[in-house]
Image 1: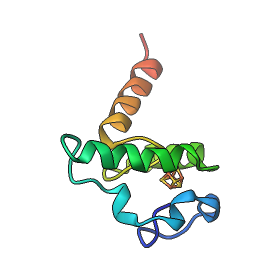
Image 2 (image 1 turned 45 degrees about the vertical axis):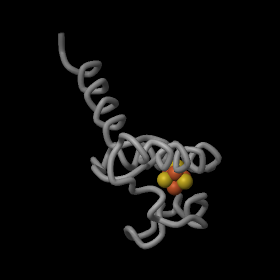
Image 3 (image 1 turned 120 degrees about the vertical axis):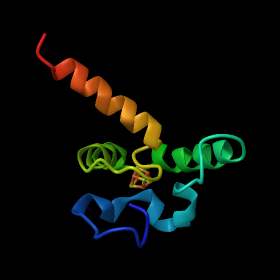
Length: 90
Ligand code: SF4
């Protein structure tokens, strides 16, 4: 959980991003220079012990901004769409 962004849930107490600049996790886009920032944020996430609950929280709360659980907004949209397709009746 990025410092100062929301109320802290229990799993967030162990988040790796608590020691990082919150701005790292909020790139202004997903092209050009933002790609390096996104990769840097994801590197922190990949070392984070709460990456899975973080991703599940971001998906459940439909978090639309920033890097959460080593995913971008666009990646979470794709995950949500894929989940809907797999749970939709045939
Ligand atoms: S997975 Fe990333 S955004 Fe989520 S708590 Fe860990 S470091 Fe922070």
